[in-house]
Image (tube, rainbow, N blue to C red; front, side):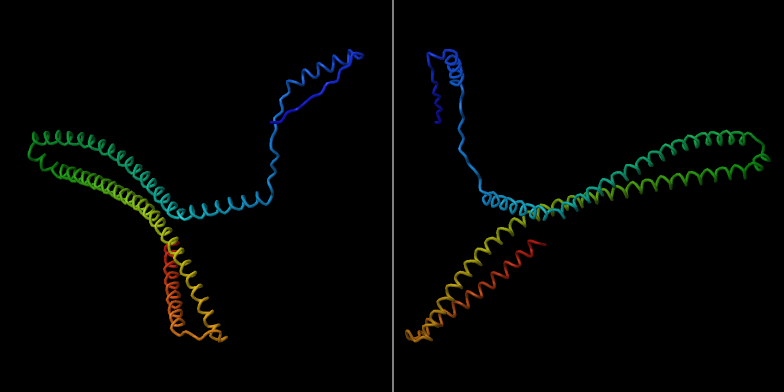
Length: 268
């Protein structure tokens, strides 16, 4: 706890100054000090923390960039699906307009059939000579109307086929989108598994390197003793060390190849 002491000097001979001093001392009693520990961070410590944070952010960025390609394909497929839906909506609007035209043509057809019925009634009540005279005109009228009805039927079939094509395209785009989502999920699972396997292989590779270094040092020591004739050579020990060194080197190469394969698969 930090305490501040104020000493006020008073004298009877200076009454006015004494009163002022006492008033100041009274006000000073209510002052509260807050002490803080003086902590100055060193520049090296701050730079070290910033470098660590920068490395962490770079690692995070590299990890997130791995899924950018799949996400871009997913967005492209989604955009294509939206365009297909817009095209289908436009086709449905055109089909609706064509349906209204067909209804109008049906109404006109009904009026024409009524006119034909009226003409037939007139022909039935006419003389045989009149029937022979008007028969070609009636036949041509029937043939023209039948041709119009066939054209209307073909137009309706074409509109129906176009709508079926849009439905098939829309279904295909949805299947592609679902497939991209499934592939993205499977890729994330595989990447996590490969990272775990890669870490395990790196640990095993480090252990193999340490063992190889120890065996190599022992072999070099024995060879030096043999050269210096400090102690008689032990062929069995030397051969055993050579065998172990060869085994460790073989294991190291196998682990390195396996690790390279995992890393290559992870980067695909």
